[in-house]
Length: 316
Image (cartoon, rainbow, N blue to C red; front, top):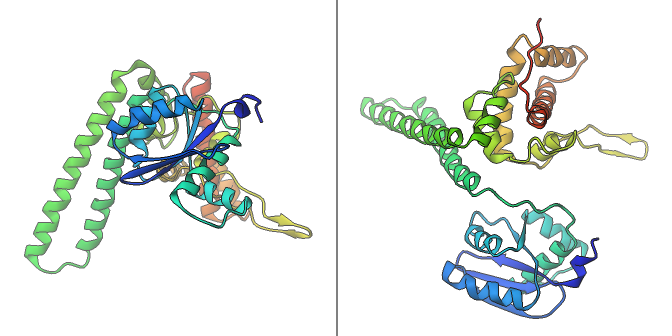
């Protein structure tokens, strides 16, 4: 644990749609304020009075976004935990009682012991992520409408659903065009975007998702990209029992797109196809081979961004 983490206090924020509860890791002070931008200056001043340098909160369906932006703009380190992390910490500390104030204090204590690196977010990537979320939402609606069409018999209903699908596809295309325009308008993002497309199976959409949703690529050590995506295998061994390896956690949204990239790369006459075919020939299940290709793809993406050189396709 770094010594400076104990010199000044750490705050935790329990996020609600309408209110925020704020408590400290060591002191008993507590505040409950409205979750509105006009209330944030007073909160920031109060945190400065208590010598706070780091603030923790849970990911809460974007209800934390405004206060996070305000705190980061004011110079605080902001750590956003996954809810299961805080629940696990509370169980470890045997905290059984529950209230908004107590939740905020548990978040503060968990944040005090958190040893990761706090990276500043790029505001442009935050906006692009919001646009991609809409793109993904529209994609889901298109899939639902197409599934519904399989069971429709009335001509009028089928015509309306067809029109709905057409409209959704148009909106998807509009939002994608805007995302790509913004990416290409920034030289640094455009360079990353183009390098990623040199990989088999990765086209403009998947490259955009990786640029926006995995900005850490290019700065990670070997194995970290796969772990961040959620495709790194974990052991399940105990005593004489050797269990099957499994994957868990990671970033669901980019993982869904890398899965599509792996399916495409596996079909190509490339290093990735040879690798997958060898795994299957050795008795691995096809889905295990796909996850292995996903792992190789995301590690390759990290490597080419680190080296700033495109992927070289091996001749077959």
